[in-house]
Image (cartoon, helix red, strand yellow):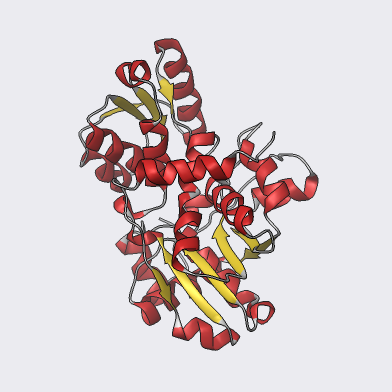
Amino acid sequence: MRFEFFPEEISEASKRIRAYIRMTPLEYSPHLSSLGSGKVYLKLENFQVTGSFKIRGAFNKILSLSDEEKEKGVVTASTGNHGVAVAYALQKLKYKGIIFLPENASPAKLEDLKFYDVELRFHGKDCVETENYARRFASEKGMTYLPPYNDVKIVAGQGTVGVEIAEQIKNVDSVLVPVGGGGLVSGIALYLKSINPDIEIIGCQPLNSPVMYESIKAGKIVEMESKPTLSDGTAGGIEKGAITFEICQKYVDDFILVTEEEIKNAIRLVVEKHHMIVEGAAALSVASYLKEKERFMGKNVVLVLSGCRLSSNTLKKIMCGDKNEYI
């Protein structure tokens, strides 16, 4: 696939969605800067509408649909940030849509979605089964399926984080980005490298689920078992044929993998030094910087904090040092 058109797509996405999202702050971190003798900035997508960057891709995809597609409605499957983003966007735009959930979806995640005036349906016992059914349902009904990352408009929407970073700070040396399916890092990398090819883009993943890293190492998308991780927002496999794999191969310069203990320590640091709550996935960039801070000496570094959806019980266990943190 040729990616030269993507920066233009991302610029258009930025104009398209700006009225519906927040331009999130880029906050200087005195504490993290002092640890590495450079300048560290936090891109606060945890302050975004619905609490994560996912709202950017959801709005860009839905706003890009034809009148006929909007009339027929959209379908997605998600119990996390993507599902909440789609629910919010549909309610805000007053469009029709259905969100499919596993029959055993957690009550806490279900409660998040019930705040929105969108139809919820249940199918299957796990997320993969639910997603496959939702895709078939959308195809059979002539509706549009909204994937979480494997879509040009979704990637372009997430890439608007890069547009804002470029507007907020000059002379960035390195950007550290949480990676799951790769939509966020793909969009950021494509846009920022179109401005300055020398910007270093680093993907951050948990050691318990480093699927993109292992796929790039293997030269193909691999199937592997993911262990439990606090970074549940990035856990799991990559869809076969995902456009994000090829983008990451070409534009992501390196990966840093972090342990569960390092993720917990990063969450604690953000709470104690910045007085903010971030989810496990968002803490990956902080944990990765702390792990390899010596390589960033004297550099201007941006750490993307991707979201804030962390349960109070999990936060309590992390702050109190409980080993049983997975909820």
